[in-house]
Image (tube, rainbow, N blue to C red; front, top):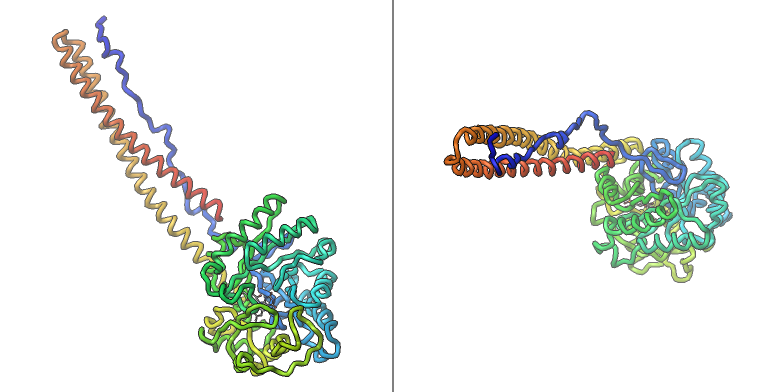
Length: 491
Ligand SMILES: Cc1cc2nc3c(=O)[nH]c(=O)nc-3n(C[C@H](O)[C@H](O)[C@H](O)COP(=O)(O)O)c2cc1C
Protein backbone atom coordinates (compact mmCIF):
# COMPACT_ATOMS: atom_id res chain seq x y z
CA UNK A 1 0.00 0.00 0.00
CA UNK A 2 1.45 3.34 -0.94
CA UNK A 3 1.18 6.14 1.57
CA UNK A 4 0.47 9.46 -0.07
CA UNK A 5 0.22 11.31 3.23
CA UNK A 6 -1.51 14.66 2.78
CA UNK A 7 -2.31 13.80 -0.84
CA UNK A 8 -4.90 11.24 0.20
CA UNK A 9 -6.49 13.72 2.59
CA UNK A 10 -6.94 16.38 -0.06
CA UNK A 11 -10.56 16.26 -1.10
CA UNK A 12 -11.88 17.95 -4.19
CA UNK A 13 -14.89 20.12 -3.46
CA UNK A 14 -18.02 19.18 -5.30
CA UNK A 15 -20.29 21.53 -7.08
CA UNK A 16 -23.61 20.61 -8.57
CA UNK A 17 -26.55 22.17 -10.35
CA UNK A 18 -29.14 20.33 -8.33
CA UNK A 19 -29.59 23.21 -5.89
CA UNK A 20 -30.48 25.64 -8.63
CA UNK A 21 -34.07 25.83 -9.76
CA UNK A 22 -34.28 26.78 -13.37
CA UNK A 23 -37.20 29.12 -14.13
CA UNK A 24 -40.45 27.82 -15.38
CA UNK A 25 -42.47 30.84 -16.45
CA UNK A 26 -45.05 31.01 -19.16
CA UNK A 27 -46.29 34.39 -20.28
CA UNK A 28 -49.17 32.83 -22.15
CA UNK A 29 -50.66 31.96 -18.74
CA UNK A 30 -50.91 35.61 -17.67
CA UNK A 31 -54.39 37.08 -17.81
CA UNK A 32 -53.96 40.73 -18.61
CA UNK A 33 -55.97 42.82 -16.16
CA UNK A 34 -59.31 44.55 -16.48
CA UNK A 35 -60.27 47.54 -14.36
CA UNK A 36 -60.81 46.20 -10.85
CA UNK A 37 -64.27 46.28 -9.31
CA UNK A 38 -65.10 48.80 -6.59
CA UNK A 39 -66.57 47.36 -3.41
CA UNK A 40 -68.25 49.75 -1.00
CA UNK A 41 -69.77 47.71 1.83
CA UNK A 42 -71.98 45.15 0.11
CA UNK A 43 -72.28 47.22 -3.08
CA UNK A 44 -69.96 45.99 -5.83
CA UNK A 45 -69.57 48.18 -8.91
CA UNK A 46 -68.23 46.50 -12.03
CA UNK A 47 -66.23 49.63 -12.78
CA UNK A 48 -64.31 51.59 -10.12
CA UNK A 49 -65.79 54.85 -11.39
CA UNK A 50 -68.14 57.09 -9.42
CA UNK A 51 -69.94 59.83 -11.30
CA UNK A 52 -69.66 62.78 -8.92
CA UNK A 53 -72.90 64.34 -7.72
CA UNK A 54 -73.33 67.66 -9.53
CA UNK A 55 -75.78 70.32 -8.45
CA UNK A 56 -77.89 72.14 -9.12
CA UNK A 57 -79.67 69.58 -11.26
CA UNK A 58 -76.65 68.61 -13.39
CA UNK A 59 -76.67 64.98 -12.26
CA UNK A 60 -80.20 63.71 -11.85
CA UNK A 61 -81.83 60.38 -12.65
CA UNK A 62 -80.85 60.58 -16.35
CA UNK A 63 -77.09 60.71 -15.86
CA UNK A 64 -77.02 58.62 -12.68
CA UNK A 65 -78.99 55.73 -14.23
CA UNK A 66 -76.90 55.80 -17.44
CA UNK A 67 -73.69 55.48 -15.41
CA UNK A 68 -75.17 52.77 -13.17
CA UNK A 69 -76.32 50.83 -16.24
CA UNK A 70 -72.76 50.76 -17.57
CA UNK A 71 -71.37 49.35 -14.32
CA UNK A 72 -70.26 52.58 -12.60
CA UNK A 73 -71.86 54.32 -9.63
CA UNK A 74 -74.40 56.96 -10.65
CA UNK A 75 -75.05 59.83 -8.24
CA UNK A 76 -77.96 62.26 -7.99
CA UNK A 77 -77.09 65.67 -6.55
CA UNK A 78 -79.64 66.60 -3.91
CA UNK A 79 -78.82 70.24 -3.19
CA UNK A 80 -81.58 72.63 -4.32
CA UNK A 81 -83.03 69.82 -6.44
CA UNK A 82 -86.50 71.26 -5.70
CA UNK A 83 -85.69 74.03 -8.18
CA UNK A 84 -86.74 71.56 -10.87
CA UNK A 85 -90.25 72.31 -9.68
CA UNK A 86 -91.62 75.53 -11.19
CA UNK A 87 -93.44 76.14 -7.88
CA UNK A 88 -90.20 76.02 -5.89
CA UNK A 89 -90.67 79.46 -4.41
CA UNK A 90 -94.12 78.49 -3.17
CA UNK A 91 -93.27 75.05 -1.81
CA UNK A 92 -89.90 76.10 -0.38
CA UNK A 93 -87.62 73.53 1.10
CA UNK A 94 -90.14 70.68 1.01
CA UNK A 95 -89.70 70.86 -2.75
CA UNK A 96 -86.15 69.52 -2.34
CA UNK A 97 -87.25 66.40 -0.46
CA UNK A 98 -90.14 65.79 -2.89
CA UNK A 99 -87.97 66.22 -5.99
CA UNK A 100 -85.18 64.06 -4.54
CA UNK A 101 -87.60 61.23 -3.83
CA UNK A 102 -88.95 61.48 -7.38
CA UNK A 103 -85.48 61.44 -8.95
CA UNK A 104 -84.35 58.45 -6.87
CA UNK A 105 -87.43 56.50 -7.94
CA UNK A 106 -86.92 57.47 -11.60
CA UNK A 107 -83.29 56.40 -11.48
CA UNK A 108 -84.20 53.06 -9.90
CA UNK A 109 -86.83 52.47 -12.59
CA UNK A 110 -84.20 53.06 -15.28
CA UNK A 111 -81.42 51.04 -13.68
CA UNK A 112 -80.83 48.17 -11.33
CA UNK A 113 -77.22 49.32 -10.95
CA UNK A 114 -75.74 51.24 -8.05
CA UNK A 115 -77.38 54.61 -7.37
CA UNK A 116 -76.10 57.13 -4.85
CA UNK A 117 -77.17 60.56 -3.63
CA UNK A 118 -74.81 63.48 -2.99
CA UNK A 119 -75.84 65.73 -0.11
CA UNK A 120 -73.97 68.85 0.97
CA UNK A 121 -73.47 69.09 4.73
CA UNK A 122 -73.61 72.87 4.25
CA UNK A 123 -77.32 72.95 3.34
CA UNK A 124 -79.99 73.60 5.94
CA UNK A 125 -82.14 70.65 4.87
CA UNK A 126 -79.25 68.19 5.10
CA UNK A 127 -81.12 65.95 7.55
CA UNK A 128 -84.38 66.02 5.57
CA UNK A 129 -82.54 65.02 2.37
CA UNK A 130 -80.65 62.27 4.20
CA UNK A 131 -83.97 60.96 5.53
CA UNK A 132 -85.33 60.72 1.96
CA UNK A 133 -82.22 58.84 0.85
CA UNK A 134 -82.71 56.41 3.76
CA UNK A 135 -86.43 55.95 3.15
CA UNK A 136 -85.81 55.31 -0.53
CA UNK A 137 -82.99 52.90 0.37
CA UNK A 138 -80.44 54.34 -2.04
CA UNK A 139 -77.24 52.33 -2.19
CA UNK A 140 -74.84 55.04 -1.05
CA UNK A 141 -74.86 58.62 0.23
CA UNK A 142 -71.89 60.85 -0.58
CA UNK A 143 -71.61 63.64 1.99
CA UNK A 144 -69.51 66.68 1.05
CA UNK A 145 -69.06 70.44 1.58
CA UNK A 146 -68.53 70.06 5.32
CA UNK A 147 -67.66 67.33 7.79
CA UNK A 148 -70.42 64.74 8.26
CA UNK A 149 -69.90 64.16 11.97
CA UNK A 150 -72.81 65.50 13.97
CA UNK A 151 -76.37 64.22 13.76
CA UNK A 152 -75.72 61.34 11.37
CA UNK A 153 -78.50 58.75 11.79
CA UNK A 154 -76.07 55.85 11.59
CA UNK A 155 -78.49 53.22 12.90
CA UNK A 156 -81.18 54.18 10.38
CA UNK A 157 -78.59 54.22 7.59
CA UNK A 158 -77.34 50.78 8.56
CA UNK A 159 -80.79 49.21 8.85
CA UNK A 160 -81.75 50.62 5.43
CA UNK A 161 -78.48 49.25 3.98
CA UNK A 162 -77.34 52.74 2.93
CA UNK A 163 -73.58 53.04 2.71
CA UNK A 164 -71.95 56.35 3.77
CA UNK A 165 -69.06 58.00 1.96
CA UNK A 166 -67.72 61.35 3.16
CA UNK A 167 -65.91 63.63 0.72
CA UNK A 168 -62.69 65.10 2.19
CA UNK A 169 -59.76 67.20 1.01
CA UNK A 170 -57.14 66.13 3.55
CA UNK A 171 -55.92 63.23 5.68
CA UNK A 172 -56.70 65.41 8.71
CA UNK A 173 -60.38 65.65 7.79
CA UNK A 174 -60.52 61.88 7.16
CA UNK A 175 -58.93 61.19 10.55
CA UNK A 176 -61.32 63.57 12.29
CA UNK A 177 -64.38 61.96 10.70
CA UNK A 178 -63.27 58.39 11.41
CA UNK A 179 -62.19 59.13 14.97
CA UNK A 180 -65.42 60.99 15.77
CA UNK A 181 -67.60 58.33 14.16
CA UNK A 182 -65.92 55.55 16.11
CA UNK A 183 -66.40 57.46 19.36
CA UNK A 184 -69.95 58.67 18.70
CA UNK A 185 -71.43 55.83 16.67
CA UNK A 186 -69.06 52.89 17.25
CA UNK A 187 -68.93 52.66 13.47
CA UNK A 188 -66.96 54.16 10.58
CA UNK A 189 -67.87 55.25 7.02
CA UNK A 190 -67.82 52.67 4.21
CA UNK A 191 -65.44 54.52 1.90
CA UNK A 192 -63.92 57.98 1.44
CA UNK A 193 -63.74 60.29 -1.55
CA UNK A 194 -60.63 62.46 -1.47
CA UNK A 195 -61.12 65.43 -3.74
CA UNK A 196 -58.10 67.43 -4.88
CA UNK A 197 -58.02 71.08 -5.96
CA UNK A 198 -58.46 70.42 -9.70
CA UNK A 199 -62.13 69.51 -9.20
CA UNK A 200 -65.11 71.44 -10.46
CA UNK A 201 -67.65 73.06 -8.16
CA UNK A 202 -66.86 73.95 -4.55
CA UNK A 203 -63.35 73.16 -3.35
CA UNK A 204 -62.33 72.18 0.17
CA UNK A 205 -59.18 74.30 0.03
CA UNK A 206 -58.14 77.83 0.90
CA UNK A 207 -57.63 80.03 -2.18
CA UNK A 208 -53.82 79.97 -1.80
CA UNK A 209 -53.71 76.16 -1.54
CA UNK A 210 -55.40 75.56 -4.89
CA UNK A 211 -52.24 76.04 -6.99
CA UNK A 212 -49.85 74.86 -4.26
CA UNK A 213 -48.19 71.57 -5.33
CA UNK A 214 -48.28 70.38 -1.70
CA UNK A 215 -52.05 70.13 -1.93
CA UNK A 216 -52.35 68.40 -5.29
CA UNK A 217 -54.37 65.19 -5.39
CA UNK A 218 -51.32 62.96 -5.86
CA UNK A 219 -49.80 64.44 -2.69
CA UNK A 220 -52.85 64.25 -0.42
CA UNK A 221 -54.14 60.86 -1.58
CA UNK A 222 -51.45 58.65 0.10
CA UNK A 223 -52.06 60.35 3.48
CA UNK A 224 -55.79 59.66 3.28
CA UNK A 225 -55.06 56.06 2.23
CA UNK A 226 -52.86 55.63 5.32
CA UNK A 227 -55.48 57.02 7.72
CA UNK A 228 -58.24 54.88 6.27
CA UNK A 229 -56.05 51.78 6.19
CA UNK A 230 -55.39 52.11 9.93
CA UNK A 231 -59.11 52.00 10.66
CA UNK A 232 -59.77 49.28 8.09
CA UNK A 233 -57.05 47.09 9.63
CA UNK A 234 -58.25 47.73 13.17
CA UNK A 235 -61.85 46.91 12.30
CA UNK A 236 -61.06 44.13 9.80
CA UNK A 237 -62.99 45.93 7.08
CA UNK A 238 -62.30 46.94 3.52
CA UNK A 239 -62.66 50.71 3.21
CA UNK A 240 -61.79 51.96 -0.27
CA UNK A 241 -60.42 55.42 -0.99
CA UNK A 242 -61.81 57.08 -4.11
CA UNK A 243 -59.73 59.83 -5.74
CA UNK A 244 -61.35 62.85 -7.37
CA UNK A 245 -60.48 66.14 -9.00
CA UNK A 246 -58.96 66.43 -12.45
CA UNK A 247 -59.28 62.75 -13.34
CA UNK A 248 -59.58 62.86 -17.12
CA UNK A 249 -58.19 59.69 -18.73
CA UNK A 250 -57.83 55.99 -18.00
CA UNK A 251 -54.11 56.64 -17.57
CA UNK A 252 -54.95 59.07 -14.75
CA UNK A 253 -57.02 56.30 -13.16
CA UNK A 254 -54.12 53.86 -13.47
CA UNK A 255 -51.71 56.34 -11.88
CA UNK A 256 -54.06 57.07 -8.96
CA UNK A 257 -54.51 53.35 -8.35
CA UNK A 258 -50.74 53.05 -8.05
CA UNK A 259 -50.93 55.64 -5.26
CA UNK A 260 -53.46 53.57 -3.32
CA UNK A 261 -56.84 54.64 -4.71
CA UNK A 262 -59.43 51.90 -5.29
CA UNK A 263 -61.75 54.04 -7.36
CA UNK A 264 -62.14 57.48 -8.88
CA UNK A 265 -64.90 60.06 -8.82
CA UNK A 266 -65.30 62.14 -11.96
CA UNK A 267 -67.49 65.13 -12.65
CA UNK A 268 -66.31 67.22 -15.61
CA UNK A 269 -66.16 64.32 -18.08
CA UNK A 270 -69.71 63.28 -17.24
CA UNK A 271 -71.03 66.80 -17.89
CA UNK A 272 -69.98 66.39 -21.52
CA UNK A 273 -72.23 63.39 -22.12
CA UNK A 274 -75.57 63.14 -23.91
CA UNK A 275 -77.13 61.74 -20.74
CA UNK A 276 -76.05 64.61 -18.45
CA UNK A 277 -79.22 66.27 -17.21
CA UNK A 278 -78.14 69.87 -17.93
CA UNK A 279 -79.27 71.90 -20.94
CA UNK A 280 -77.16 71.46 -24.08
CA UNK A 281 -75.93 75.09 -23.75
CA UNK A 282 -74.38 74.17 -20.39
CA UNK A 283 -72.53 71.23 -21.97
CA UNK A 284 -71.49 73.27 -25.01
CA UNK A 285 -69.85 75.85 -22.77
CA UNK A 286 -67.41 73.06 -21.83
CA UNK A 287 -66.65 72.34 -25.48
CA UNK A 288 -66.18 76.05 -26.20
CA UNK A 289 -64.04 77.06 -23.22
CA UNK A 290 -60.27 77.49 -23.26
CA UNK A 291 -57.89 77.00 -20.34
CA UNK A 292 -57.92 80.76 -19.65
CA UNK A 293 -61.70 80.73 -19.39
CA UNK A 294 -61.64 78.66 -16.20
CA UNK A 295 -61.35 80.61 -12.95
CA UNK A 296 -61.63 80.35 -9.19
CA UNK A 297 -64.54 82.21 -7.64
CA UNK A 298 -65.64 83.01 -4.10
CA UNK A 299 -68.95 81.38 -3.36
CA UNK A 300 -71.66 82.30 -0.85
CA UNK A 301 -71.23 78.70 0.42
CA UNK A 302 -68.06 80.03 2.05
CA UNK A 303 -65.65 78.02 -0.06
CA UNK A 304 -63.83 78.78 -3.28
CA UNK A 305 -65.27 77.23 -6.42
CA UNK A 306 -64.08 76.58 -9.97
CA UNK A 307 -66.23 77.85 -12.81
CA UNK A 308 -66.16 79.05 -16.40
CA UNK A 309 -65.77 82.83 -16.70
CA UNK A 310 -68.99 84.61 -17.62
CA UNK A 311 -70.55 88.04 -17.84
CA UNK A 312 -72.52 87.20 -14.68
CA UNK A 313 -69.35 86.40 -12.71
CA UNK A 314 -67.56 89.48 -14.09
CA UNK A 315 -70.38 91.69 -12.90
CA UNK A 316 -70.43 90.05 -9.48
CA UNK A 317 -66.71 90.50 -8.98
CA UNK A 318 -67.04 94.11 -10.15
CA UNK A 319 -69.33 94.61 -7.15
CA UNK A 320 -72.77 94.31 -8.71
CA UNK A 321 -75.48 92.95 -6.43
CA UNK A 322 -78.09 90.84 -8.19
CA UNK A 323 -81.73 90.95 -7.17
CA UNK A 324 -82.19 88.12 -4.70
CA UNK A 325 -85.44 86.35 -4.23
CA UNK A 326 -84.75 83.97 -1.36
CA UNK A 327 -87.19 81.08 -1.07
CA UNK A 328 -85.74 80.12 2.29
CA UNK A 329 -82.28 80.13 3.81
CA UNK A 330 -81.10 77.00 2.03
CA UNK A 331 -77.39 77.45 2.90
CA UNK A 332 -76.15 77.54 6.47
CA UNK A 333 -73.44 80.06 5.56
CA UNK A 334 -75.48 82.37 3.29
CA UNK A 335 -76.37 85.83 4.52
CA UNK A 336 -79.09 87.34 2.39
CA UNK A 337 -78.07 90.85 3.44
CA UNK A 338 -74.48 90.56 2.31
CA UNK A 339 -74.74 87.96 -0.48
CA UNK A 340 -74.43 89.52 -3.94
CA UNK A 341 -76.48 86.80 -5.57
CA UNK A 342 -78.33 83.57 -4.85
CA UNK A 343 -75.99 80.74 -5.82
CA UNK A 344 -78.79 78.15 -6.08
CA UNK A 345 -80.66 80.36 -8.54
CA UNK A 346 -77.49 81.16 -10.53
CA UNK A 347 -76.65 77.46 -10.84
CA UNK A 348 -80.23 76.53 -11.69
CA UNK A 349 -80.32 79.20 -14.41
CA UNK A 350 -77.13 77.74 -15.88
CA UNK A 351 -78.61 74.23 -15.73
CA UNK A 352 -81.51 75.47 -17.80
CA UNK A 353 -79.16 77.03 -20.35
CA UNK A 354 -79.74 80.62 -19.24
CA UNK A 355 -76.02 81.22 -18.92
CA UNK A 356 -76.31 85.01 -18.89
CA UNK A 357 -78.14 84.76 -15.54
CA UNK A 358 -75.83 82.29 -13.89
CA UNK A 359 -72.56 80.44 -14.27
CA UNK A 360 -71.20 77.02 -15.03
CA UNK A 361 -69.14 75.06 -12.53
CA UNK A 362 -66.33 73.10 -14.21
CA UNK A 363 -63.16 71.18 -13.34
CA UNK A 364 -59.72 72.47 -14.33
CA UNK A 365 -59.66 70.06 -17.28
CA UNK A 366 -62.96 71.21 -18.82
CA UNK A 367 -61.03 72.98 -21.61
CA UNK A 368 -59.85 69.56 -22.86
CA UNK A 369 -63.42 68.55 -23.73
CA UNK A 370 -63.91 68.75 -27.49
CA UNK A 371 -67.17 66.90 -27.99
CA UNK A 372 -70.19 65.51 -26.25
CA UNK A 373 -70.29 61.72 -26.20
CA UNK A 374 -72.40 59.01 -24.60
CA UNK A 375 -71.72 57.62 -21.13
CA UNK A 376 -71.04 54.25 -22.77
CA UNK A 377 -68.41 55.75 -25.09
CA UNK A 378 -66.78 57.63 -22.22
CA UNK A 379 -66.53 54.57 -20.00
CA UNK A 380 -65.24 52.46 -22.88
CA UNK A 381 -62.57 55.07 -23.64
CA UNK A 382 -61.50 55.18 -19.99
CA UNK A 383 -61.25 51.41 -19.79
CA UNK A 384 -59.20 51.15 -22.98
CA UNK A 385 -56.78 53.85 -21.80
CA UNK A 386 -56.53 52.17 -18.40
CA UNK A 387 -55.69 48.80 -19.96
CA UNK A 388 -53.07 50.38 -22.24
CA UNK A 389 -51.45 52.03 -19.22
CA UNK A 390 -51.53 48.71 -17.30
CA UNK A 391 -50.01 46.78 -20.19
CA UNK A 392 -47.35 49.42 -20.74
CA UNK A 393 -46.18 48.95 -17.15
CA UNK A 394 -46.32 45.18 -17.43
CA UNK A 395 -44.72 45.36 -20.90
CA UNK A 396 -41.64 47.12 -19.54
CA UNK A 397 -41.27 44.50 -16.83
CA UNK A 398 -41.87 41.77 -19.35
CA UNK A 399 -39.03 42.88 -21.63
CA UNK A 400 -36.78 43.35 -18.62
CA UNK A 401 -37.63 39.80 -17.59
CA UNK A 402 -36.99 38.47 -21.08
CA UNK A 403 -33.59 40.17 -21.17
CA UNK A 404 -32.81 38.70 -17.75
CA UNK A 405 -33.90 35.28 -18.92
CA UNK A 406 -31.58 35.50 -21.96
CA UNK A 407 -28.68 36.45 -19.73
CA UNK A 408 -29.62 33.69 -17.35
CA UNK A 409 -29.44 31.10 -20.12
CA UNK A 410 -26.08 32.25 -21.35
CA UNK A 411 -24.78 32.28 -17.78
CA UNK A 412 -26.13 28.79 -17.34
CA UNK A 413 -24.12 27.63 -20.35
CA UNK A 414 -21.01 29.43 -19.16
CA UNK A 415 -21.46 27.86 -15.75
CA UNK A 416 -21.75 24.38 -17.19
CA UNK A 417 -18.67 24.89 -19.35
CA UNK A 418 -16.75 26.25 -16.38
CA UNK A 419 -17.80 23.26 -14.40
CA UNK A 420 -16.92 20.79 -17.10
CA UNK A 421 -13.72 22.30 -18.51
CA UNK A 422 -12.49 24.13 -15.49
CA UNK A 423 -13.31 21.77 -12.68
CA UNK A 424 -13.76 18.33 -14.22
CA UNK A 425 -10.76 18.45 -16.52
CA UNK A 426 -8.67 19.68 -13.62
CA UNK A 427 -9.98 16.81 -11.58
CA UNK A 428 -8.87 14.36 -14.31
CA UNK A 429 -5.45 15.93 -14.50
CA UNK A 430 -5.25 15.81 -10.75
CA UNK A 431 -6.16 12.14 -10.70
CA UNK A 432 -3.60 11.35 -13.38
CA UNK A 433 -0.97 13.20 -11.45
CA UNK A 434 -1.78 11.29 -8.31
CA UNK A 435 -1.36 8.14 -10.37
CA UNK A 436 1.93 9.42 -11.69
CA UNK A 437 2.97 10.31 -8.20
CA UNK A 438 2.12 6.84 -7.06
CA UNK A 439 4.31 5.28 -9.73
CA UNK A 440 7.29 7.52 -9.06
CA UNK A 441 9.36 7.41 -5.99
CA UNK A 442 10.03 9.93 -3.30
CA UNK A 443 12.26 12.10 -5.57
CA UNK A 444 9.35 13.09 -7.66
CA UNK A 445 7.06 13.39 -4.70
CA UNK A 446 7.72 17.05 -3.88
CA UNK A 447 7.55 18.17 -7.50
CA UNK A 448 4.28 16.42 -7.91
CA UNK A 449 2.98 17.85 -4.70
CA UNK A 450 3.88 21.33 -6.00
CA UNK A 451 2.11 20.68 -9.21
CA UNK A 452 -0.87 19.31 -7.40
CA UNK A 453 -0.97 22.35 -5.19
CA UNK A 454 -0.88 24.53 -8.29
CA UNK A 455 -3.65 22.49 -9.78
CA UNK A 456 -5.54 22.79 -6.54
CA UNK A 457 -5.34 26.57 -6.53
CA UNK A 458 -6.30 26.65 -10.20
CA UNK A 459 -9.13 24.37 -9.37
CA UNK A 460 -10.26 26.62 -6.52
CA UNK A 461 -10.06 29.67 -8.82
CA UNK A 462 -12.27 27.87 -11.33
CA UNK A 463 -14.59 26.96 -8.51
CA UNK A 464 -14.71 30.60 -7.36
CA UNK A 465 -15.55 31.57 -10.88
CA UNK A 466 -18.31 28.99 -11.02
CA UNK A 467 -19.65 30.16 -7.66
CA UNK A 468 -19.66 33.79 -8.77
CA UNK A 469 -21.69 32.73 -11.77
CA UNK A 470 -23.99 30.83 -9.45
CA UNK A 471 -24.46 33.97 -7.32
CA UNK A 472 -25.31 35.97 -10.41
CA UNK A 473 -27.85 33.32 -11.35
CA UNK A 474 -29.37 33.39 -7.88
CA UNK A 475 -29.82 37.18 -8.11
CA UNK A 476 -31.58 36.68 -11.40
CA UNK A 477 -33.83 34.09 -9.81
CA UNK A 478 -34.70 36.53 -7.07
CA UNK A 479 -35.58 39.16 -9.67
CA UNK A 480 -37.64 36.58 -11.44
CA UNK A 481 -39.45 35.65 -8.21
CA UNK A 482 -40.09 39.36 -7.47
CA UNK A 483 -41.50 39.80 -10.94
CA UNK A 484 -43.67 36.76 -10.49
CA UNK A 485 -44.95 38.11 -7.17
CA UNK A 486 -45.58 41.52 -8.80
CA UNK A 487 -47.67 39.87 -11.48
CA UNK A 488 -49.72 37.80 -9.08
CA UNK A 489 -50.42 40.79 -6.80
CA UNK A 490 -51.41 43.16 -9.58
CA UNK A 491 -53.54 40.82 -11.61
C1 LIG B 1 -70.98 71.24 -12.56
C2 LIG B 1 -70.48 70.65 -11.29
C3 LIG B 1 -71.28 70.64 -10.17
C4 LIG B 1 -70.84 70.03 -8.98
N1 LIG B 1 -71.67 69.98 -7.91
C5 LIG B 1 -71.31 69.29 -6.79
C6 LIG B 1 -72.22 69.13 -5.71
O1 LIG B 1 -73.35 69.56 -5.76
N2 LIG B 1 -71.77 68.44 -4.62
C7 LIG B 1 -70.50 67.91 -4.55
O2 LIG B 1 -70.16 67.29 -3.54
N3 LIG B 1 -69.65 68.04 -5.58
C8 LIG B 1 -70.02 68.70 -6.69
N4 LIG B 1 -69.16 68.79 -7.77
C9 LIG B 1 -67.87 68.05 -7.71
C10 LIG B 1 -68.01 66.69 -8.44
O3 LIG B 1 -68.89 65.86 -7.77
C11 LIG B 1 -66.67 65.95 -8.59
O4 LIG B 1 -66.18 65.51 -7.36
C12 LIG B 1 -65.59 66.82 -9.21
O5 LIG B 1 -66.12 67.52 -10.29
C13 LIG B 1 -64.42 65.95 -9.65
O6 LIG B 1 -63.50 66.68 -10.41
P1 LIG B 1 -63.53 66.67 -12.01
O7 LIG B 1 -64.66 67.54 -12.41
O8 LIG B 1 -62.21 67.27 -12.39
O9 LIG B 1 -63.72 65.27 -12.48
C14 LIG B 1 -69.57 69.45 -8.93
C15 LIG B 1 -68.76 69.50 -10.07
C16 LIG B 1 -69.19 70.07 -11.23
C17 LIG B 1 -68.29 70.07 -12.44
